[in-house]
Length: 372
Image (cartoon, rainbow, N blue to C red; front, side):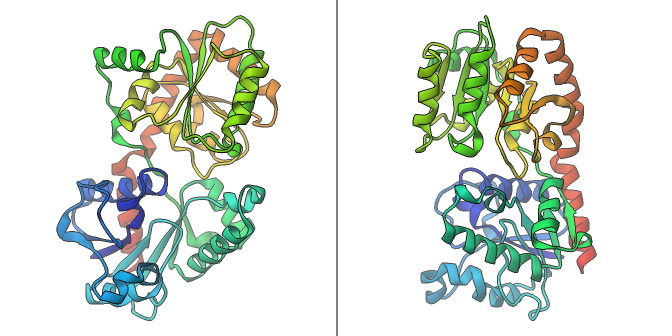
């Protein structure tokens, strides 16, 4: 069996869809070696995925396809897939090219989330129209749709009326570096770099309205007499001043620290040293930072209402992301109860076994084979 992938994000995106694409391809290469896997990408210059076999990377062949790479991914790639004798094509990032069915190629598309439908005010109208067209078209034409969570499956059924029988939920896991313990001398070095001497609560994610960091700061301010710091790690955006406003409002300048441009290599140590991880995002498709925390042996406080309870399972406590009092109450329970934190860590370790690369690769190959 020969399986092709729309792997643009694997070779171009450092986070999000890129991480998912690299995870899927690496899991398949490591655990299910029988099929042949070919990755199709407009270019491979970022050196983000050196582990993928060079001979199995496919780029546009003609002058026009190289110049019009978006059109290549949308339509003309199908000729190349047919010439490569692809049996199944998997769109890893919400899209599928035209003409697959006519070419006799079975198709799978992964839909990550419909956040732009659930929280439309956070997206430009033109972007919503483009996303809606791409997602609906891919779901309609695909032989099978992968949802990365039960929440995304529910959204696909409710908003796009996709047949539930056509959707299979297949989870993902995080970067393997979060599964490895960091040496103590390295941990101490990273603590010095970021000036974090004591106990702290960690939150990792782009600083944006949906991630809800300002309300986390507000809830943290309501927890009386604690010696913890709150460490926010994420890319700065136009939302950052709002967070800073709340830090100033509650006189938390010494208690809340915002870190930008933290290398991925430093994150495992920050996760492993944290007493707890807080992620009260209003809406997510899955919530990879939750898995990063659980693999790190760190208990979680996450938001109710989307997929985070699904990702964290019994490894966390959960709060209404719109209710400061609820967030503060759950935060206080974790801060004051070390035994509870230990109990959540043990439950989280058992929960994350279902997200292993071996398990997910097997599910994917079974799906591909059943389509043939």
